[in-house]
Every structure is written in C-alpha cells, then in structure tokens.
Length: 107
Image 1 (cartoon, rainbow, N blue to C red):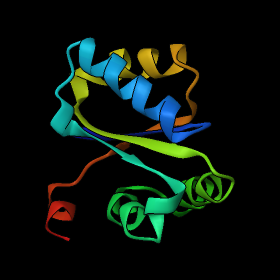
Image 2: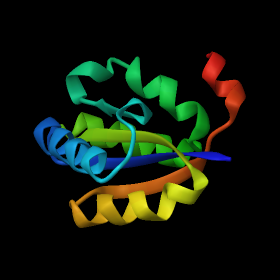
Image 3: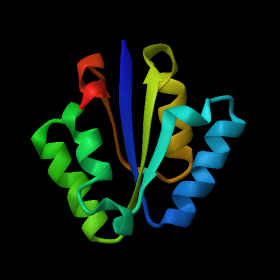
C-alpha cells in the first residue's frame, strides 16, 4: 500500500532543496509536491489532508500559517523508511506517514 508522507520545512527554498536531494537519491519527482504558505489558500493542503487524521491536519495548517512549507510525497511502503531518514537528515519537522487510499485520488 502506498503512503502519504508529510514533512514541514522552514521555507519554500529549504523544501525545494530537499526535494532536489530526494530526487537525486532515486525517488521519482512525480511523487512529490511542495505546499507553500502562499499556495495554500486551502487548495493544496485540502487535497492532501484527506488521508491525514484531523489532529495532524491542524498541525500542518498551523505550520503553513507560521510560514513553513510542506513537502508531501506519495510513496510505496517499501520506500517509507528511506525517505523518512532523508527528510530527518535534511531537518524536516513533523514528519509523519499516513496510509494513502486510492479512493482519495478521485477527489
């Protein structure tokens, strides 16, 4: 089963740098997105939080309000530990993995 992994970063620039790093590490770019405070307007995050428990969703909304950016990945379960290690090494905050339901793709 695929997982949704979310990590907060201090700025869009840091999130973009981390994204470049994980892609260099062998992950496919199409599996990732960066949600910035300006881009949020409840559009980017709402598409993601369908898979996220409400407590965590509130945490990520607060991170955006504080000016942080979110790096979101949809990745196969066998890659979760490796990606989390990369995000931790890059200084990611509030890193969590959630089950990704295929039905939420249609929303």
